[in-house]
Structures are given as C-alpha cells and as structure tokens.
Length: 286
Image (cartoon, rainbow, N blue to C red):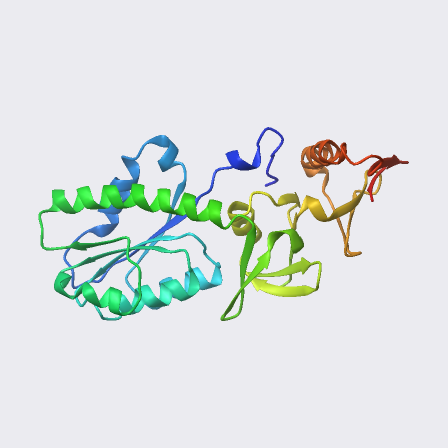
C-alpha cells in the first residue's frame, strides 16, 4: 500500500511501536490480557502509536521473530519466576542486542534480585512484583505503557538523523543523508540498501523501515527512497535517477507521492537559483 504523505509534515508522522509479551508458564498471571487492557485504556494519541505484535511462551521464538523482522523501538513485557534466568534478565540482555532501543518491563516473583539488572548494565523501564494484588499490577502496567511510548518518542526524535540496520548478527548505523534507496530482494526478510558509498544486504521489511523512518518515501511496492538523493525524475518513463547513478521506477499508484516530492524539492531548491529545471517531461536537479 503506497503511503500518501501529501498532507503530512515529517514531524507529524505517527510512529508505531510493537508490543510483545513473553510469559513464563511458572508465573500464574495472565499478563497478555493485563497488557492488552493497559493498552486499551490509554488516550487515543498513545493508543494509536501501539501495535500489539504477539504473545510468546518460548523466548527463542520471540528472539527469532524480532531479529527476522529487524524490530526497532519495541516494548517488551516479560514474566519470569527466576529474575536472572532465561525468561528474565538473560532474555532482556538478548533483546537489547537485537533491539537497542527496547523498553523492557519485567514482572517477577523474584523481585529481590532486581539489583542484578544494574550489575549487568541492563536498563529496565520497570520491574513489577507478581505477588502483589492484581489491581496494583494493572496500575503499574498502565503507567509502564504510557512511559514506554513517551520514551520511544523521545528516542525516535534523538535518532532521526541516523539510520540503523542489521546484516545478519551485526548492527550498523549510517547517516540518514547517505541513504539513497531501499529495495526488496528475492530473499524473504532481506532487503537491498543503496547508499552513496555502496550497496548492502540488510534484514527487515520495507513496511518496517517505512514506519521507523517516515522521511523515506515509498514510490512502489518494492522501493523506499530518500528524496534528498534524487537528481532526476522522468515523468514519461516513471524513472527516478539517484545521485549515485542508480535508478528505480515509480508505480502509477505512487503518482501522489511523486508530486509531493516534486513540490517539496522545488520549494526547497527555490532559494538556490537555477538548481531545479524542467526539461521535456523531466525534473532535473544540479
């Protein structure tokens, strides 16, 4: 689905944060429904930023999913009977290796071991005792959802000039200005990242990066572009030429997106005399 950005300024684009629950069967607590309720009661402006993406009892399946989908800015609710065990601190550390901006909330009956999080340099948004009354747990979860969204909003603003991606097990950061385009490949959950300095194969999906980086424009089902690195748009052939010499084609469904790119680029370049020209069905930038 092509994203229509014509009426949106970059600062107004809504970020969506994935929420995950991983439950330890040894903890007799229906965390899934408690978290769902905590999300539901939020104000619309908060509720609309949250996407509930799954409940797990196997931590390895959760890790496989967020790595395969290259999840960023996730919010994770974990229950564990042993704070430092594979469902608790150990899982939290592994999540952080995949999703560096993760907001982590632990619910445990081993609350006395919370100091181990600080000793292991694992930042938790909250650590909640599962032994207290349900209404108190619900209150803490309600507050945790709100705090997590606010933190992710701040983190997103701080990192908006940096593009983060993964290639296999390795994580990388690239100046967003160097991103040319991202295209799909024949391999599932693998994309081709074109930068001003080279080409990289990266993990994830186009929709994920479109959501995480709303300043990139979707010109087809298979391509996201950075309009700052477009040097020519051919309206007749639907070709978009980039400053590194590569090109992609935009789809007919993306015509509104192309018009908005043109409008913004012409407005941006208007102060640079003669920097944008219309030449026989083409817009050319120098």
